[in-house]
Image (cartoon, rainbow over all chains, first blue to last red; front, side):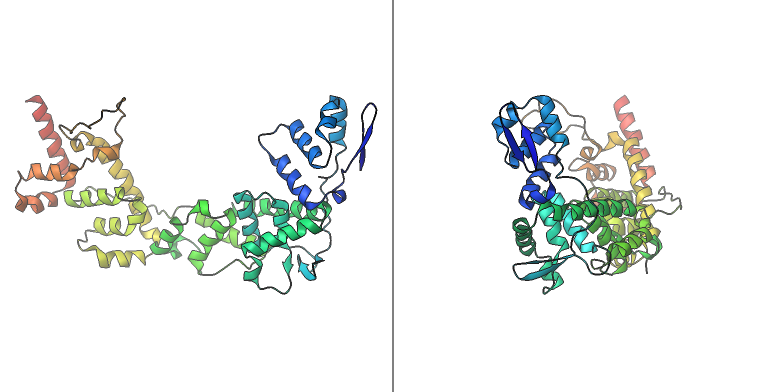
Length: 182
Length: 215
């Protein structure tokens, strides 16, 4: 949490990944990927998503706004993966077995396809593809409706800090495999 | 196991060419290509295995060309017309079997085409590639011949006259019109005319057209 000081008042702003829901993170991710918004506009939208009112944002002087952007930590990249298993609604979801995270070719394809489709909840979708319910078959796992439901389930139950390391890792690996394949 | 284009049949190559790249994700496209030439399914491989497989099949990014040079000057006028049609009714590569069988001189194509589709693509790809280039040269060299002398005007005149593309010069009766002229309208002479060398016929027609203009 960071304090936003204006002339007479002080407001609190959630700015750490563990304070932001995955649903909010999806929105922030989309805003920061936007090609139509300028950098400052993007952060205006991000802070609005996190609950800062428009009037506060527009009352802020330029220097304070820049400082606020600098102190925004939610997107900080961490490479250490969180738990490889998670239990949600009574089901166990497993990201990988063994010591190292390796994704399957089919996972990579599903992730690339969702990026191509421009899904609005891309971070949640990545988690939905990676985390597989232990009691389901491979075909059931990749069913579109199952993946969509699971993405929602993650949105409602995990914070951004759980998703960011996986998203970072997947982005790195996707780029690497595309370069290797060239 | 496919190690190079030598191990890929024409049929497999056509399957690869037919993959709709825009419907597939980048990795899916690469994997589908490999699956076509090996018959294996790679969806369950992990990322390390995938990288190895992609490296192993990098040759799929190249074209299945060989260095043999081919001359097409011996083609009959009839064969050239058929080949021209195979190059325009769809992408030339999709008619690779018909093009190669016609160049080889087969008149009944069905059996020969089936045989060609089971042969290595490396044996035939360059033939099509060379013929496409040769055809472009010929059509450019003799472009005046395939245009109607007095084309019927369109009902509505376009505001601007667009330059004709090479394909548009093959008007409705393009080749038939030339054959009709050479036979003096006698259908029994069609075979005689179409068996003549295409260069001879095209030169003859050019000469005729020049003389007509001068006269």
